[in-house]
Image (cartoon, rainbow, N blue to C red; front, side):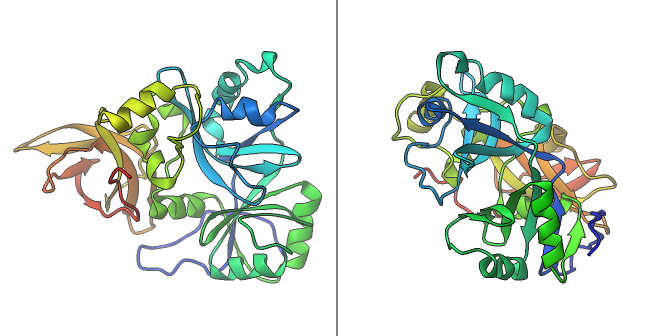
Length: 317
């Protein structure tokens, strides 16, 4: 089958493909191997690396000493080490930061040259089940490493040869760019961190605690003091919310969203990610104050937007 990955043409009320494969060109992996990989990574990130089973996947974040995020990632075991799946635009900065203390440990940290494909839809799930021998959230196969991101989303980490094997086996799938992958992430309320948001926000402002990306029971890690204060002293004043409305152009990460204050408008928050359908309907995740009134209105590109319901709770656990 052809392996071109065009932009997907879809309107708001269209049904998403039952089986689609996206080339994830805006995503990348950092890999960590070496004798000290577990202890080193555990002391750097918000999630519990020590407790991560071989077939498990977890969200996590990497922060500076003040608790501001350098990256948000999915962490999983890969090739005798670990892989951190994250946005490509911030990857070079994240590599520099996460390697900062590596000289004192036996670890090798690099940006992977693996090919990243996103499998989405119910038929994609069925195909993966039929073509893998295990049933965990992380599965090693002849096609590469499959990693479950959500119920209808799987990442495939593969080589060029493995990718060719996938497409020689498949009989039918919609091929598209990674905008469909972004739409799935937005629907799930999953945060991502592009370069425009680097080192600006603590993890709770991007709901990392709500998707089990922060362990409050593990030992010390970089930025822990700020993150713990935000939880136990209620010091965090922001959260990420789902918004929708019309737009002429899809908002970009870092764009400003306005909010109503009486009859006036002022800066309300920051766009994290967005997807614009062909008919102009747009969904987005945005960081906003977490104490806004329920009737607060939002505006982007001079058009009023509304706040929608997230698929998870922001109540402190």
